Length: 162
Image (cartoon, rainbow, N blue to C red; front, top):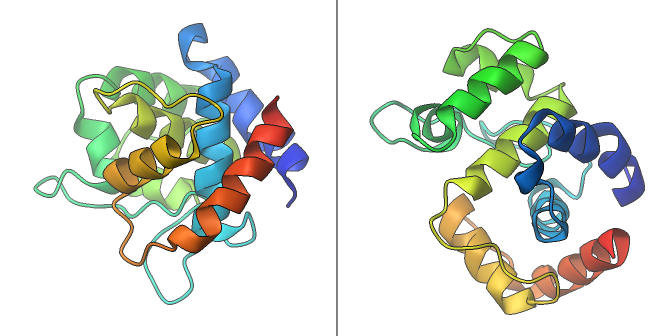
């Protein structure tokens, strides 16, 4: 899937279901950059792993507070996630959400945006490649990060959004 397609079929519809203040160019650049870094917008299921969606969310656990569970439990995102699940006809239970994000790109994009929203730091500027990388590492905590690809992906995301 190319960037224009995921913007139209996933990110923009997700933003329409979230508070207007979340729909920013900075958020869209991060969502595109992270999606490209995680899956190249080709894989909704992690190759050889448990993660789901283009943004490669794991289910996590109540104890780990990671992945879907993290967004589900965080006070800044929990109510918004409940509204998003209602709008997408998904039961507000982490296991059901985790299963749904493999095929529901709107729900997956919404959860990815909510994950970014749980960070107490502001999103980096659209043209802040190194700040974007730092945010990605801090929020996604990738197991095998690939810093050599980030700059190119971030530039493509900027061009799509700006």
